Every structure is written in structure tokens, then in C-alpha cells.
Length: 298
Image (cartoon, rainbow, N blue to C red):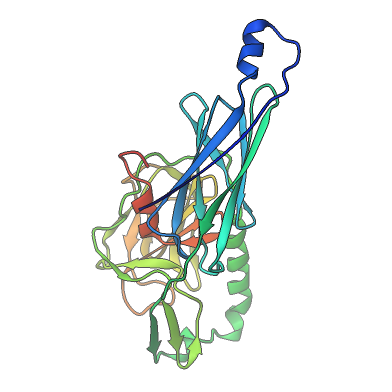
């Protein structure tokens, strides 16, 4: 766990108002910022907390050139947001920019540093059948169409958070293929592994990790039978290679709900569960998400 704090304050110009209102408005609007993360490395989820000196009506924030939604807790003095550090982020100091606006129009702005450091990901070299490396010409259009559809979904920010509390492990098995691992198939470098693979036998029930809405339940060329759950605020779970899909698009799911069964559909060599998490388009490790969002306060 890493905690970092910053602080900024500005004074307000008080205009004519009732005495009690003037006394409140004469207080400076200030904000302190802290973050919580396993580490500040590619693939990690960072929980950012902004604590204001008095309630604010709105918070605007951004990081890594992306809008970061913040949600209030309690009396609207404390706001929280999730930042995803993508696999391709540069190893240097970045900033979360936060702007809070009070009901009287006063604003405060601060930049909270996130010093991203390097991480070494494993590389594997495999010899596989040619179709796992170069798809046939007659499926290229399908692949492009499916990629455009999933990208559009991941790029959509539902304005409310559906999830509550911690994220459950969707199957009992351990993660067997690490997030971010590089693969070289038949001498050709492939995209980094943008999810986590979990050991599970064919037909093992797959459970929803948290509340959300099913936005895709379909067969994709590479991923096979898959389910995408929108957890709100740009946070998505993507489950692939299912032997059976147990939900339909538009269904609301709760933690522990059955969404399908483990399989080996799509372009894989054996049964397992592949779980991808996207956080405002950032590719992040599902194990990081489970570590940061817990039932005891995350």
C-alpha cells in the first residue's frame, strides 16, 4: 500500500449575504488529496480521495488525458475516484487534476502527483497452429467489427456507480496467466495479456464479481462466448471463452449471480476463465481491482 497526500487552499471574496451565510463563505475552500494503491506501476488501480474543507456540489477530475469520475460520500466533503494506470503509460511523474466547486460558486483546484515506476512483465515463446497467429482473410471484417463494438462499449462512461463494496473472485481457481505478460507466437510478438486467466475446469460456474448491467453477451472470434458487465463510471468486466452464456444483454447482475460456465471457446487451447478489466479505457489487472476495492472500506 502506498499513501501520498497533497494540500491546496484559496481564499474566497465574500459578497453581501445574510450573516450566517457570510460566516460560512468566509472560510477558505481547501482540499487535501490522498491515494491508495498496491503500487504505482502499469496495470494498477489507484483509489484517489479528495477531502474538502466544506461540502462541494461538483468535482471534475482527470488523469492520463482521461476524465476521472468522482463520487461523493457522506456530507459531500469527501469524494472518491478510481484511476487506472494503463500498460503503455510512461514511467515518470503524472498528475491527477481535481477541481471542486462549492454551492456558492467558489472553486479550488489542485494537482496530485502519481510517480509511475517501471514493471518487468514476463515473456513466453510458443509455437502454435498458424490460425492462432494469422486469422483467415474471410474473418478479418468480423474481427474488426467486433473490436469496434467492444472499444465503443469500453469508451462509454455510465454516469453512476453500480458496484458496491469489494469485487468477488469469479471462480475459485488461482490466476495462472499473469496480467501484462508478453507472448511471442511463432516468432511474432503479440499484444500484452490484458487480463488474468484463472484455473477452472470445463463447466465451472462463473459468477458476477459485483453489481452491474450486462452490455454484451455474444460469441466473438478471438474471445469465444463472452460477457461484458458495465459496473458504472467507466469500469467494465469482460469474461471470455465461456462454454455457456447464462445472461442476456440488459440484465442486471449482483455479486455471485451466475453469468455462464467456464469453457474453451474462441482461440484458446484449453478451458480456463479469462477476466479483463477496463477502467476508463485503461487496461488494469483484475487482481489489483480486488485488492483496492474491499468490503472493509474500499
